[in-house]
Length: 81
Image 1 (cartoon, rainbow, N blue to C red):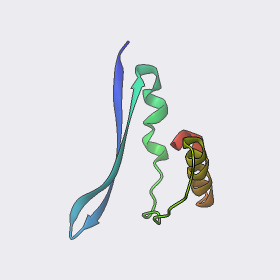
Image 2 (image 1 turned 90 degrees about the vertical axis):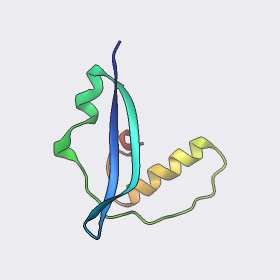
Image 3 (image 1 turned 135 degrees about the vertical axis):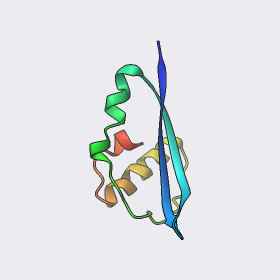
């Protein structure tokens, strides 16, 4: 089975230069490439505010992330995380 690395990079323009802010990587099977690399559906956002949430478990953390994503009207939170 072949695996592929799908990478995301967030950046901002600063004085004409692209400055790296954040990134993500997902390792996928060949059959999943089209699902997670559809360029027509790229969502471009302004930088999100920094927030802090006190949580006790990983499950609580995922719930909080989903809630925060929903608060900014982004659908499909499960797919984003």
